[in-house]
Length: 113
Length: 111
Image (cartoon, rainbow over all chains, first blue to last red; front, side):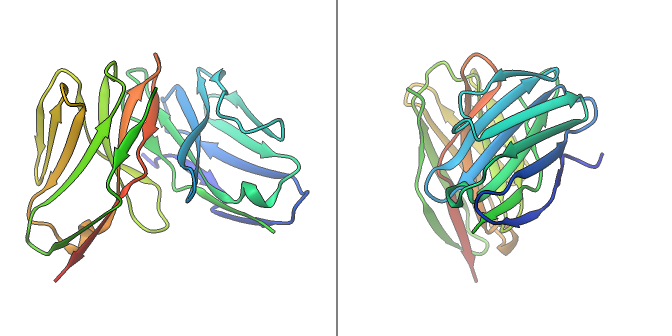
């Protein structure tokens, strides 16, 4: 299996621009998670989807952040407008029905200048 | 509340055993995990243990769980330079598959 796929791997953008991060979960997995990793706050869960439905978005920092999962093989995390404090590594993870094995993608390193 | 704590740094000599420790606060945690992160990479699931177990061994890795003290440890036997990485402890909690991570322990292996 190819594992969780994320794109782009690196993104550099200017403050105020829209940023879209993409994730393809492992085939057959029905749960998808978006995490953010920073030096100050460590790893934080942003949002969790189950069967394409958002179950818990309490970790989404503010309205500038939105996430969608239009089908079982694709999810996006959008930041609009972006700010320098959004600079972080964003990880996508997926798990199957049993749920207790979460597999992470390689991450997208976002830099907002 | 949910909190996972681990020491930030560990240095060991190549060939020695490494022991990375972690404490957690949620007594209702169902699974406890160890993930490994190498520079510039994602998190690799190393091993995990169900909360009703007290030990799990997988090749060079041994996980010990003391549920009474809410203490988890990861022992790496015969530590190699390729084991140099950040190791994250995590607990599964929250009624669904939510993981709470510690800050990570940076393991440095020297000759």
